[in-house]
Length: 257
Ligand SMILES: NC(=O)c1ccc[n+]([C@@H]2O[C@H](COP(=O)([O-])OP(=O)(O)OC[C@H]3O[C@@H](n4cnc5c(N)ncnc54)[C@H](OP(=O)(O)O)[C@@H]3O)[C@@H](O)[C@H]2O)c1
View (cartoon, rainbow, N blue to C red):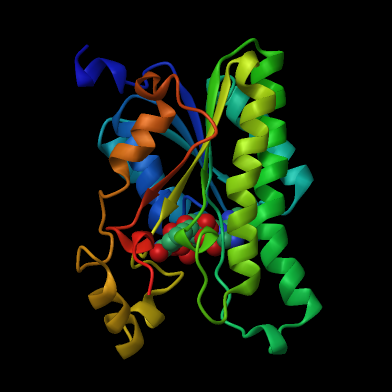
């Protein structure tokens, strides 16, 4: 089979949360470039609008939907708007997230709950809604969650984030099991360090440069390094893959000590 055929997403409707910057913006562009019609979801409207313009200028199709992933009413409106524009979402990318920069002993309950709500709970509720709608429409689909290497190892100051991302890995497995027979695949991508707004200040600091030198491949992830894994999980090329978390980190999590 030709690569261009098995990775093709023509006829698919994708919804990407956290599409206003970083990894999510790239995910949306890659899905659109490979034929999917894409709903771009985040809170910063202007960012979504300019991404939409870029996608359309490149020959793709997209709509921008402003929504906070923590707001369940906004979630329902987002799926409704996407369905009205393009039809049932068949590729759902749960990517919105935020990092934490507080040591455990200094963390407030409010901050703990904010990170868990955003980085774990929202993945559950958007997956639940997306899968319900796929099943109701009799559509097969793919859910792709953004986890992190911090699901597998920890560093100081990331307790809530690491717990949330480990939860995403296990949630991916649990949902995949319940949905496999119904034709909905659920997988996750666990990126290593990619320089984006979430971590730019830290990764460009002396400590960040030290971390870069410790990565077996000697560099941070760069634009394009997640394109292949995203397309694999979203398309029929990955049609028998479910419950998996694919680590893309230049070898980072292999090393002990
Ligand atoms: N960069 C890395 O090294 C790395 C590594 C592993 C995992 N990740 C994960 O990758 C994902 C994307 O992160 P990134 O690195 O691309 O960072 P980013 O550039 O800061 O992007 C985060 C995205 O999430 C959106 N977002 C945050 N809170 C939201 C909310 N309440 N409702 C809707 N959207 C919200 C932001 O949009 P608005 O602010 O416009 O709402 C933005 O589009 C996250 O899940 C992150 O944990 C990143």
